[in-house]
Image 1 (cartoon, each protein chain N blue to C red):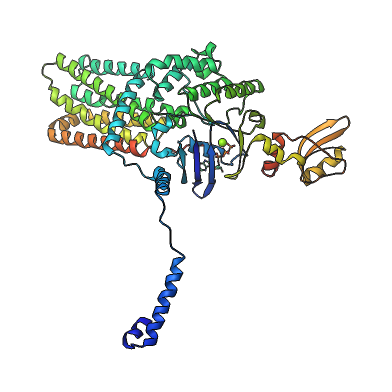
Image 2: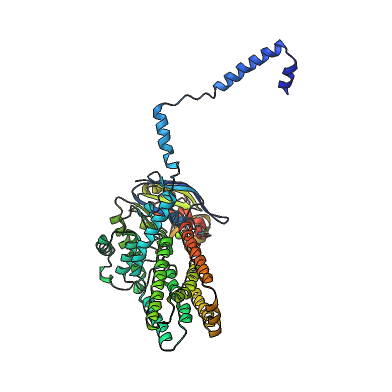
Length: 271
Length: 290
Ligand SMILES: Nc1ncnc2c1ncn2[C@@H]1O[C@H](COP(=O)(O)OP(=O)(O)OP(=O)(O)O)[C@@H](O)[C@H]1O
Ligand SMILES: [Mg+2]
């Protein structure tokens, strides 16, 4: 307001007033003068601030470190899986092979049905620590909760792969007419699919009975799928469809695994 | 070695469990005293990095423990208040497994496991399944796993709860044996657990740190506030409603009351030497009797 007035009244008096005002403001501002700090003080300040400076994290290094940790721990976990898990899987191989060899079941239906069972059973091992009340302890270890869980999943998934390959190869040896590639497609698809679901599941639930439910659901679904007419339909589907479905499930699994690793699991420390 | 707790606050939904805690811990034993729900476990969980504070941070030698991540977890040993173990594992197998989770080098594991088993006195039971252990023995397994990595910071949440007096004394002796060169945090309701081994006592009340002093100076603070008085049985209710009354002991056909009061409650009441039990009562009586 004042400024506009000054523009069209060139009054000497006003000029004086402005000068006075400037001086007054200047002396007022003197109060806020800050002395330039000495070298020593600057260094001290920098040192004091150092802990507050965020460390720049190398994302890839973190992921790589995590993967190494998980693989290393997975090797350890093998020795601490319950013997029941190994026995059950031995029985599984026997059942799959004898189903095809002795009972003349459709080999493709058989591998599809058996493909993810190891993983579903393995979830019991993965959830064991939560059920035993070990979760809070695990969170305090060097290999933390997520790493321990993912390494167990790695053991279970890896073993599942080995079993499926074993079944495929042994059936391929017995029956010359079996198409190995087709067999692979028939089990890789449900396997990757269930693996993705399992990762989703372990990050959310901790009740073991849910695994039983999962098992029942899978057996019902696969029982239905292995009816001759359904199998025929499934076999007529283009291979691209299986490949795409597997690829999607695989990518989902990887995403979920990284997500679990980074964000931790939905786990409330209970009182 | 220095653990700094800076403006730590923890809120659950709308419930505040810790309110602006500031603390600096150096080597030695710290006893955390507090009534049920005062925030002991919450504080210890944050220090054990199993829970994130709502605001504030914890620094280990000036470095934020959230940034240190597994480097920090390598330094700690933690025994939660409620914990379970793999029942089908023997003590030895369990500890070997935990050693792997703590990232101990393979070649050191056997020796270290043996050492902690010996330290907690489970050598005889090393190959027995944990499922069959008594409460006290399980607690010893708990301490053993916490010690495996030779932690610089040992956090034990109510380790003596539910133990019989003999086990408690055992535990106290063990703790004073292992407390050199570490920061030890121990929460308890039982003041005698920490009376002689704690460097400082931290008193938590409704999520607030109300005291952090040596046991001696805390006791000095209530020096002239502990009274004993012998009265008739019928007078007991009156004193109980007017004062904080501790021990009541029968003396022949009358009763001796231990009273906590800033002023002399009766002309014939006599001053007595305070103990930590009195201290606990002095700070927590309202909640306990309410
Ligand atoms: N996970 C949680 N979710 C909601 N509220 C919680 C949770 N954990 C603790 N609280 C609340 O925070 C407060 C402090 O709890 P905390 O367990 O730390 O107390 P405490 O001193 O360990 O008690 P106690 O002596 O019974 O072990 C309590 O009121 C409790 O109800
Ligand atoms: Mg508690």
